[in-house]
Amino acid sequence: MNNYSPIRAGIVGFRGYSGAEMVRILSRHPRAEPVLLEHLEKEERPRPVGHPGPPRVPFAPEAVRSEGLAAVFLATPADVSMQLAPALLASGAKVIDLSGAFRLGTAENFERWYHEPHTQPGLLKQAAYGLPEFCRGRIAEAQLIANPGCYPTAANLALKPLIDADVIEREAGIVCDAKSGVSGAGRKPTLKTSFCEVTGNFSTYAILEHRHVPEILRTSGIGESELSFTAQLIPIHRGILETIYFRAKNVSSSGVLFDIYHARYAAEPFVRLYEPGNVPDIRSISDTNFCDIGFQYDAPSRRAVIVAAIDNLGKGAAGQAVQNMNLALGFEETAGLL
Image (cartoon, rainbow, N blue to C red; front, side, top):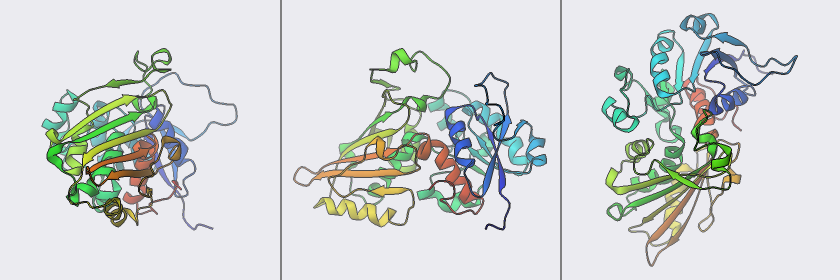
């Protein structure tokens, strides 16, 4: 039997898809329990009688102290996260932000890609980028954690080990063809994400200006001119599959690429590798916090195709946010996620 009491973790934006996924994960977490912070009054689905779910309290910085919240998740748009983060940090809670508000390092970078002013530039240097496989040390010490975007999570896990090993012919270009389920667009209804527009359809969006591109560039260390990234919407609820194309250099066989990945990820609990010639699909990672990576390599032509799959609500959002909370609070990294 455990001899400790669970900590309490607040969730702002719990009605959205990522926030609701966070409630689900934290409700089964062995070291934490969710508290729903009511930021905006909205109509919602009715609750069954006798099953009210996690406690709900009005959002206020004082509530963080009075409720004894060790961490607060912001599953909110970037402008709302910028508005709420300073007071939450002042209250002493660890803040894990799921928006893009604190991911890009500088206000100028944010303003270029998000097309809005950054209202808290002083917090950007303080924020730790929350990709545990590459930023674990800083996450563990951070008060503010910027949870990565879903597309960059898969892209960086697939690309960074190969970039670091200098086996990609970068001047030949890297193409990332990324497909996502509709929940990645959030719960707010739009024409493009309505049922009649999505079902039986397949569409691209934000061509050459997707706001997740700078996260890939910044984390993997590649130039904007070296990457072509296209996001595409597919008619499923959840899941991301990215197909990444490049020409390799100094790679004699597929075994070389596999050894690079294996050396980097053998000890990582949430990255799973496939044998050369085998690749994952979306079903393999649905409702998990895993990133699955497989590839095919043709040595004579030096053509490589990497396939990376994640659940956009799991490793792409709420699952990774809980992984970051575990690190920041000194819990087992896999707690509540396996």
